[in-house]
Image 1: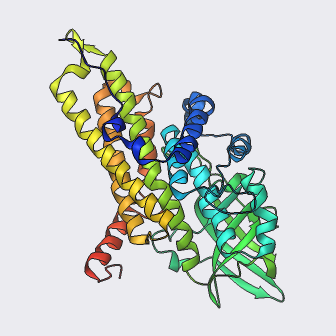
Image 2: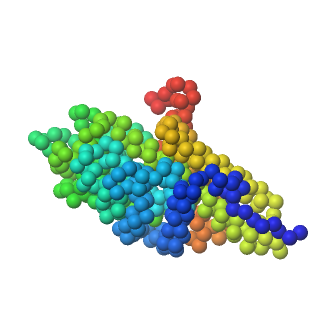
Image 3: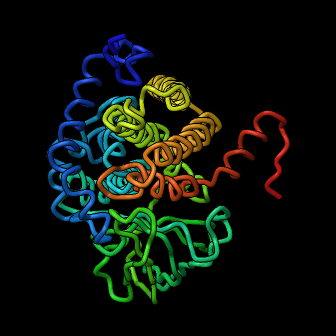
Length: 392
């Protein structure tokens, strides 16, 4: 019997019918950028543990991808769904590339846009939207990740100035950033500060020897008596509400981004299985292989439908943090399962950088735990279901 024409996994779910033309055009534009400009270099960047952020940022900015869902100050003002679809295509390239855009737009830029002064917005946002200035977000510390309220970084008043002392860890874009949004304990509670990275006492040594997110720059931030003026503080927020609101923006992008990594893994594996002959017929023609591909296609489609639903809620202004946790927990957990299963189907070929699947799987090990571990999101959902907090 002649084989039928194969369809792409998400075509089984008629996803295109659920996305309006403007958002779909944005998705296609990002997909074209990733295919032409990024994918040809990913194996080299990943193997070298380096990505040319300074070269990529202006290209990403020229397409309006940096802070794309924010309004004004040179930002594109797209829908939340369009931003999610852009994250999907970026992470179909590599999680590190999506992280670059996510940290710039949903963490550093969003913090200034939502909680900053007009002077801070005018000074930084237009340049960051254009990719002329790079931002990073200093919240996590060596001993405080899931419990940011325990942070030891401290800011004290000294006359009209603030002096910051402490360390931040696992900071994307840190060593190439022009500005850092740093969160610190003060006598008034947790406050955010906009810190130019050229300020005396600020340094950002890069973290090397990573086995995940290698096509991404990760750094420590060292604040050794960093003195900033009163105008550096984010004036519109006190407490953990500030950084947590930014994390929710970034987590939303991950809900879509994880689908991109899973889709790219599955599509690459289907192509391989169709071309790889075993015992005189394609690997794709075996029942066990098709059962695995069918299960992965089903979970991929369900994750995509969940992401689109959350995007619609965000565009309507009704999305709540508990729902973002649903999306992050499910979609990253399923994406990493898909990438691992794809690696197994490919056999030895799956461990090389000739194929993307183990690179995606390794990257997703980081995505699984940053912006809230799976366990944290389980407890958030558990609290929503029971009304009881199990964090303490």
